[in-house]
Image (tube, rainbow, N blue to C red; front, side):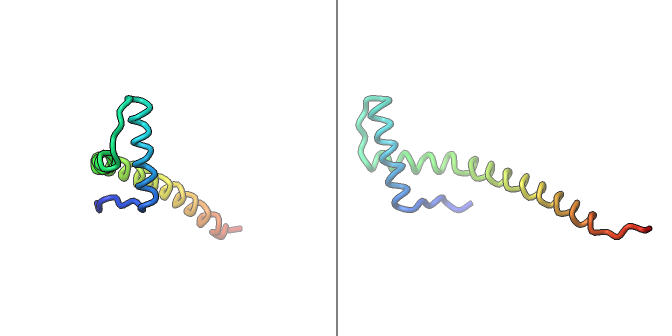
Length: 81
């Protein structure tokens, strides 16, 4: 799996959210670099699990759509009269 790359704007927003969380929930002030390092850690640790869960959801959706398509194709068959 390729490393997860976030657009700069999204990364900055998440980093600010991490800093705000630490301030509100833990009463700690952390810098931008510390928050960015924490984000990078979580992306590496959680990224594969989230990615695999998303693939599983996609696989389930694809199976449902293929079953629906198969039903549509059977409906096109000519019936003997």
